[in-house]
Length: 215
Image (cartoon, rainbow, N blue to C red; front, side, top):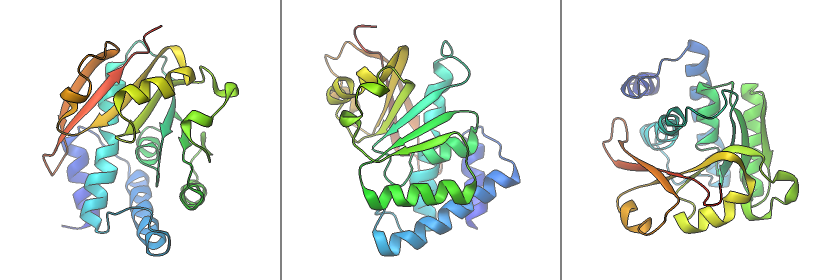
């Protein structure tokens, strides 16, 4: 199965359809990530299959959480905390170009890649902040509808760090694998847990939707 065929099969499992230009964008992202990875070690995933399934499709699971948050405005502003090589932010942007994305990443080599891929894919309404989430500063207070993270934070730490930057009606979305229930035990801010399976792999994913306690 070619990388394109694998991606299309995974998108079908997610109930997503893509125009050819979006498929081409993913293939360019795949090629550039592998090229840059040889020099800068941006990701531990090396093969086409692993990158497509465990980066691209895993990132798009977040759209399931977004659809749960129907009360949020249609022009979402989403921050990707600890974005790394652009996951989940870049795949979300490719599929949902109307969403405003801010990629927050402290590694200079990774932010260089992010800016390169944004220019190459001609992505609009997307920005890169080369710093850690906890160091954003007051100018980003209540700036985002949603802040997402892929297992970068413990749930309790994510709440403490991210809540100052979320709008009053906003939410946090954290992805965790098996064992998520134990980690969030006793955390009252959990609004919902979406128990999902990673397309084409079947690995367990738990999308934890968190509401900041004072909101």
